Image (cartoon, rainbow, N blue to C red; front, side, top):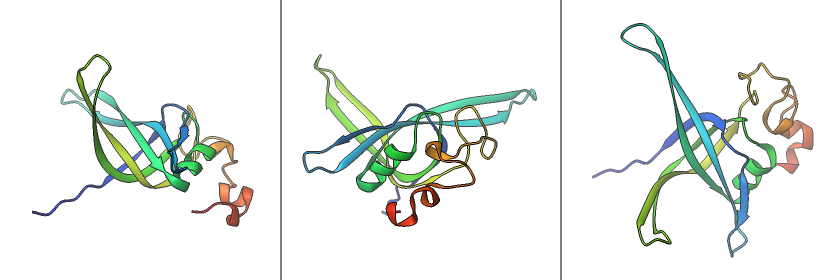
Amino acid sequence: MANFNKVLLMGNLTRDPQLSYLPSQTAVVDFGLAVNRRWKSREGEDREETCFIDCRAFGKTAENINKYLSKGRPLFIEGRLTFNSWTAQDGTRRSKHRVTVENFQFLPGGPGGRAGQTEEGAGGVPAEQGPEEQTGADDIPF
């Protein structure tokens, strides 16, 4: 039986990225992503729902997400769905799904604005100047 685990999401960060390091000194960043869905109901009224997704990235990807992004910034991610389970302090079994980010792409726009309608791009970099142009292409390893 074949298997395939690929997740593609585009949304806005719900909180500032939280960077930490594993004992092996590998960077890990956790962040939330809000993805909106809009549609018309059978009655013709506009409807909207928001899905909140926990995400995690490792290594240079984690460091770059932490460095250039903050709450409200738009982001496109590609990754895989992972399942974690644990025993809570009260003895109950807990579990959750999370997206492990493998690739990402900065998007124009910012908090409270639509893509291309704000003065700043991802991470506070002016929209007409991406992170590569601000710091030099050799400084960013992606």
